[in-house]
Length: 344
Image (cartoon, rainbow, N blue to C red):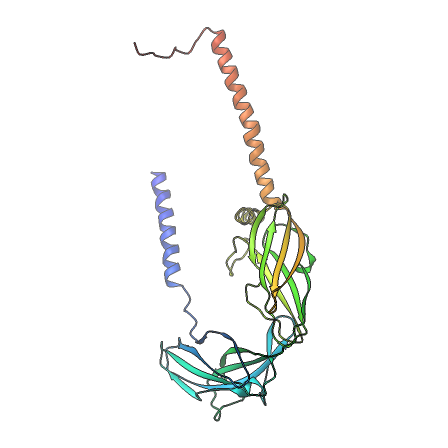
């Protein structure tokens, strides 16, 4: 009767959790989205390039959006662009329709053109096409008015382009050596003194203490570019299992300990590791390599594994000892196990 009552309470708790999960789910954020978010195109001086973007209205109301343009350049090492009102260059070479009206849940394809002047400087030119709720004039070039979303346009103009770039460093973030658990975060910096953007492409190979490959990571997961006359920092994480973004550590010491043990088991790694960066960049595919070392010691998990090992080892020995005593006692008492039965 007690067991039945307990089972009923468990089922009731599961039902409540499921019900709350269904009815308390937050609403999806409604927005205007553009696809793709970035165009990487190439052309010759005098060419006209024709491209298309897709605008999607995820709102419940009809929206009229207005186009505007801006040039951008690198700001800091994170790759965040700094937008400026275009007086020349790519921001003035792009043309598209002045406005578009998109119904709720609808999507529309919007063409745009990039007219490269015949005297355009070879190398990289960068701009953004904004779509926003603020109305401007024809070929609106106002930046920073109203709610806006945009797509980046990265244009390479063919010609004699100076290429001068290189890897500055590679290591774990803050040069950290000891880790309690994954993730392990790496960073490397590219300096570009050339005339066009540089996008490093390659892998980071993680090797364990005996130099066997443990994992392979994309060395540029965000496909970041180092723009001319700038330095770009690129971050890469090694992790097998990521906690949810809204994860909160349990309040109790014991609960937090077991939460950490579970996380370390899902991200199992222990010992000395090496991270071997191998990336290529530029039109010649120049390769650069660097190596960083780090040590992972998941002490909470190792304590639990040690306790389990001790229990099994000494418990097993004790069990064998008791069994042997039992056999000897039966033998001394003249009690023998029955002989095996044989078919006649």
